[in-house]
Image (tube, rainbow over all chains, first blue to last red):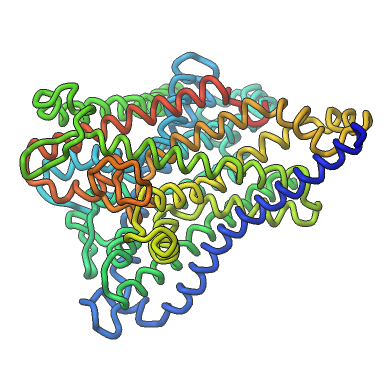
Length: 280
Length: 286
């Protein structure tokens, strides 16, 4: 075999191997997606949206308590996390820029984005749950806020940085003070990008389970008092899936399906915003 | 007036930005303070002792550390070759029509919450392992495999992005010299994207070691060091998820806090290495 032939054969082998591994990888991933969709749709019915949890064996138990609890916990976290994250990101992009302090905050935020979320749960347990003496929806929201902050901060920082400095300079030349330039010019220019960051940040924390296990804990019934333990789709899913009761496991799949659709939906909307911006 | 608002806005944003640093410092301090009892009681033995016996008030973290290391190692071992294959396929091989839909589905799969990977593992993968190796199917091996599938889309997406940064002109020059696709990939694309690719592996490692939900379902939380990968085992996050709400004594809590601190330090270190050595920050637009 000549050298050239050898190279061609090696090339073919590698191409086949690579396509195969792509097939295996994608196969696994679509297997999970398929399982999720099939089980989820199979388990869905109207009662899931209108009824609360029930002991195993009851016919029409639902997930209303978990869905509403989830909305409360994630909603409050968003209410705190988004404005704080955007303001902190504004500091980095508009005031800090390449200063040492800003760089340190960026680095620490990047690291926090990948830090284990269960550790945040332990931290919030120590500062909120233990002093209060019981689990609460607030504790869950605080844990999710801490996880969301660095994500919003970094995307805001990046997105504001994309706004051309000529726009800022034009506004300054008209005599506008810096805060007005930021709010009226820079924020407007970066609107779509910031929105994408917010959507992705919310999507990210909505799927978090570990930090809620010992902060908001769980509740099998509807509760809207943030001072009390609160159900969430994720923790409910975990409890139901690991229970030995088939009807609870089925509810677990329904919860998984609803949550995934919500998260994928946010991701897709976020991407569309970003594409639109790029298209302009 | 507007000068005051201007100052106010500056200090407001600055305070919040500094608040992030404060929170991170607070996390370390709080975890450390809560670990003090355990640190005083066991000292350095905490990480070398292999007995975890809450009823005897004896806590050694070695089985959990061992489980974290081995399950993560298994996950990386399985995920990296597959992910590289997927990345090569997505960036160099796939027909243009397939690139976008496949690429987007990989990215969306990376967004699916890890608890769902764990659930899938429990219901669909545990029986396979049970049939293949006997036992209960809940094991170190199962955890490693489920973990590898969870980090696969992340590594594949980041590796593909790194490969895509290779300038076309470099690839075209290599093709013009008569290079095959594989020649171009191994001699041009991979060397060019090397730092980004290794960075993504290490970042994935950092995520895998702290991952809780994907493995909690399938690992078993058994504090025993066994060379047999088909035996139930535990890891640091699995121990935390299973035992935090059951702890009934101060020392038990304190030991769990020390585990949390340990995990935070380990993942901080790994992620910092990925970040500072391999993934120098690229600002969008810069």
